[in-house]
Length: 380
View 1 (tube, rainbow, N blue to C red):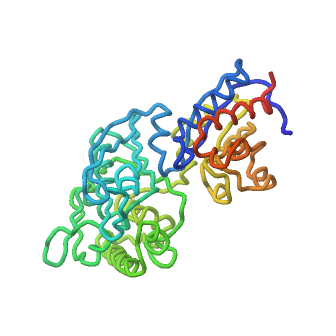
View 2 (tube, helix red, strand yellow; view 1 turned 90 degrees about the vertical axis):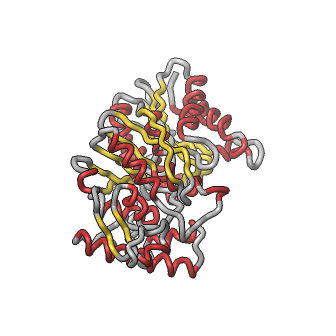
View 3 (spheres, rainbow, N blue to C red; view 1 turned 135 degrees about the horizontal axis):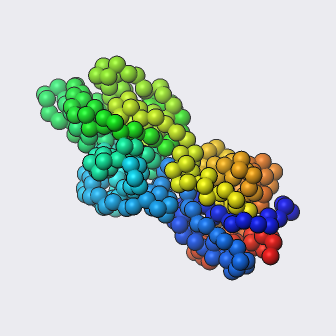
């Protein structure tokens, strides 16, 4: 049994339970269980994300303001999206505009889906006068190398006949000329920071098409087309800018949007959870805490490679505060989760009465997990 904290508040900082509960609801339910078991304990809810889906929600829960924006979805149909703004910083979540969740009827469009809406979100943020844009990548429906994104920011992409290039990764094979347009002026004085946890290059067997294309509906023939388009895109960007970012770690993120952010937006890349914890004020929240609780839908081997709970555990233990995890499923051995810095771990599957309850009764079980961990870890 881990040492029992005796004073201070509790910080509840989970990621979403994908497909079941949003991070804010996970935090609220765990917090409710803690308060029921230990009514005198102060509990602070700070849902987190690692830069992918849920990043916008985490920013809003931390006090950012929501700005609604109607943009082009991945197939060009309008979608309702939003950005989060606080002071001179805006948070843009790619999945809001160009995510798989925005595909009409859930039908994939591997060759035609584009990232134009992401650029529209960035343009909206810049138009509001922000000086820093945090771009969260993840859940992308497109493999267009970020071409659509920069088109929305004023970059001209033309075929050999001088016509504006159509959306999607397949169209990139016909790219003949790139005109930077007003991009430099638009982003003057604006810092773009990408929250990214993958190190894939743009091209090759570990590139955007080969690794992530199949998740977006691409078959073998589509992958050949997409790779050719991305190669053409990288060549033309290099000619226009003098920079070759195709091999940069993270260039292959979100169907190559990482590449365009690096090569054309002058972005820097940061590990997603590290950047988000900084943005959400985690260091301040954890100061003086007696316990931090984090978690996600499944605590597994991927968790150990930069996902949100591992980042929270590292930051909390670095501050000298013990950390407990709550997950829908626990697929790590006790040695593994203790090695990752967790003092205790609770799985909804272990609390469920019937198979499947961890999904259908996730909210109720998360609250029960909060109650159990409070009984185990928090002295009266």
